[in-house]
Length: 503
Image (tube, rainbow, N blue to C red):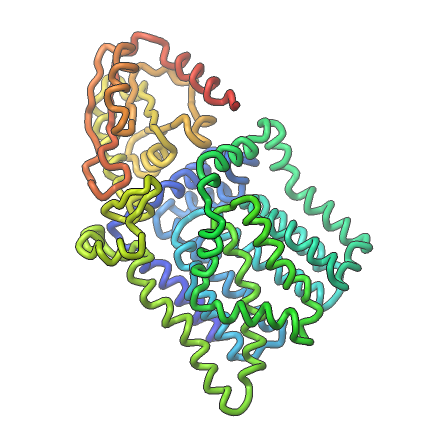
């Protein structure tokens, strides 16, 4: 028990020290935190669970500590579920320590640094597989109902869990566990699962299924660039120090007699990866697949290394994930200042970490640059806002959701920034009459903004810009427009309607 507590404590400790205080939150985090103020059964790109957690964070004070607490918690709970799975498989203390070590020193450390749906997604996958194992062991129908609830929660957190279901069901058909399909409890559980997720499905229906538009947009702009070979290479890196454990798990599920009842999980592994490959999914979508196999591999290795000289290999097995993690620790996390990274750029460049999605090398890794400049932006918007005539008649419109979310998170004033991107397009308050506009604009479109917007106001000026040259938002401009000559509200309403007119 105390060993498990130690792992969980170490998990929380690592998550908090892996981010240097020089960095702000990441752009996606601001969007998810803002959902707390706009609760609904769905959003343009994610289901509702993240907004519920954001509401809790807001009630707790909305500090960075609590923002980082919940992904850390979900990571710690993943360790707990793997621990309980190993116990269910009759693993000994060595198996428990090996499994917990493999989960702790893995890609989950990076995943759990960010407040996104991904951490709970991995936990949901792991918990669902654990419940299925409980059903295979006991044949008690209650576990089918528990599985339905776990799946529903996972679905309401991130649609990605659909891949789990589509990978598991055909795998069950190939084995003796196919008897599950003749049980009435199986179909009742399916119905209950559908009932649990129906509010989100209804929301999707009432809003013309924005998830379909989001997926099409994702396929056109990002997934089209996904390299299937690159996807497979990334899978090897996520649990690099634990690959041998996962390999032994697959071997054991196929040939180890005590694991014969779990044969569907052998086929599930490959069916699920094939589905991800076929749809050209992002590599990290598959991370939730692996923790449960670490449970099987740990138990099998514990039985394999349980006598004679082989016992000495137990320490080696536990050491491998830790030793592999040590060099990763110094470059894969934002735990070094921007100045340090620039001073040691050759090392980062050699791993390709300085290359952004534009194909060019930059000063910092793109993810790290995406965590800088946000507080500066909010402070400057606040300063400009206070200098405007009738500041309460000012609307702040940003180019992207990261800018809008960061302003709303850090602002000291009564500002609610919006954008025509992501969910912000549904959060405009057009009941207030606006005469002033603060426009946060990408640097590349500097001239267009003055030409397009300036004539509609009595006074227009480029008021400030982001000076942090390490930030991805470097040179982002803040325009100030006052004394509107037109009905701003009507103009915004027209633009919202045009943007919502999805192709």
